[in-house]
Length: 220
Image 1 (spheres, helix red, strand yellow):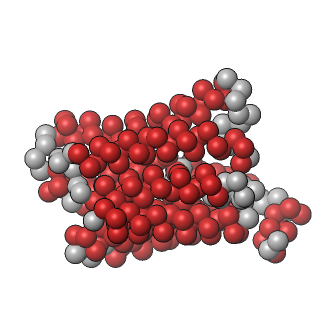
Image 2 (cartoon, one colour):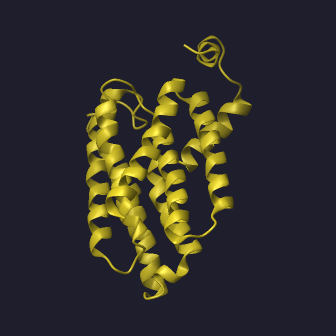
């Protein structure tokens, strides 16, 4: 156990640290990351959506949020209300098993749609493929450690931005730098307000990065 972990067990961090950490954990919840990535593509590469109307584009953004955030979150809520899990925050490895498979299905569906739709960026195919595989590998790793879902998502998003830069051959240095900074902030926040160990935090980031590289290699 690291010195940080020992300190966390001996003395709780102050409210001045835990309150912002909780806000950061909510704002950058793993379920929101696909929506953030889609919006980034809309803002940074608007020509990729030039052949659809503004209304259809708004519906696409809403659809991404609906499929990757709302439905998985609602499924967790139902599991909690039906007493299949004890806490909607999924604090134990056992409670995470069913939500992993639920999210896996929705990510697979988004990957399937991205392969067959021509009115959105091709890079979404490897991105969805990557996050789909994070759920597959994540649920296996979950049998051994409670790998951090937040840093899986943060690692996926950061690597996706780097790969977008390669694919489009543009300089996304500012966006990538901000993403890396946010990764550090998210990791620190999870260490403050969760019971994750350093290894669970870092391995989550590594898994997210690996699966995006895998997706790019296979799909592009």
